Image (cartoon, one colour):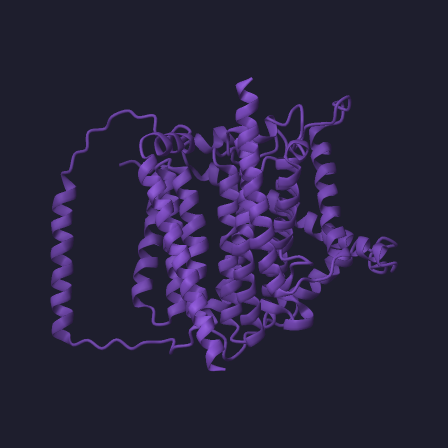
Length: 173
Length: 335
């Protein structure tokens, strides 16, 4: 494969994504983990851009790196549990884990290496915001509406839970 | 020119050109920030019947901000002992980098623009949200109760006001049929969106002031309650980075307001002989003046009033605006 700009960008972005994921697992402080997660999310958005899915990339940054991580940070900061956790493992367990990971990697490698997806010309990369909108509102209108109802139910549920808490506090005082 | 560059094969020459352009834009923005701060202080002085800075650099204090920045750069860089060191160091970077990244998507004139993206508007909103992470991180890493409170307030405020901000521009997206900022400007050739979407403009202006953390919505750094909010513990150039990102956002937000509502670089009728760049600069300066005016005139809101205003007033108004716009658009396209 020749070294094109796209390939370089892909290498950098996937490295950042993987390093972010590894750091998320290995760091001990919860807030550090969330910041590592943000880097992972943003580089995945960058990979979406490389695949010409701009809309998905922007939504990924807006929802995941913006809103969700901030809500996670909020939750972590407001609940003052002990920040660090110690991990205890024995050697045998580690060895078995390593074998399992290597095995999994090998299987996936074999599966992917000779995978041949026939390339067919598409127009998906042109004005994909418009295409997503048309698809969503013509073919998938019912799942879309049902999703919004589910989200509304979650919203109402959250409000009820929060309100209940407040009333109990009032009774106690 | 940029379009060709973006599609050419990579090489050291391209890297050089891109770096050069980025540095050039950085200097333009730094120049704006320098004189933006000076003009803000001058206008504030004028509105509060003071004189304002008039010592350093002649009668107009033209070197005042330069001197201030120099002072900041040679100040001692302090990191508190109990601070979370890596996060404390990385937080100003996370806060500043998106501020500069959003500038890439803004078309200043039909010639002077960098990336012509199909989703330019969405890109701006999405990337500017990352700064909040930096601010919250700074508040938490400082290990100081005022900083933490400021960071919390910033997170709550920016999440709450991002929603009306996005909702207010949906009307414009409906009318244009595109998220591309160039096409939005092109659609305003005959009539500006401030005329067609006055409600959206007011909601956008209020929400953008809140997003910029400026007075009346500067709760994250309310000096009378929180000392200085999320950047209490920062000093020297790290603090300067927070301030810089704040003013770069002011630059970006004023440009975006110009592009979305004031017709970008399009001239008023019969005044087409004035160059596009001058028109853009004039409209941009008007928005900046408006922002300074708001800062001097209004008192700060209370935290609960802020939340209530965002969710109970701005959001319903923005939603109603979308509904009415969609209805009117359908009605007009019928006839």
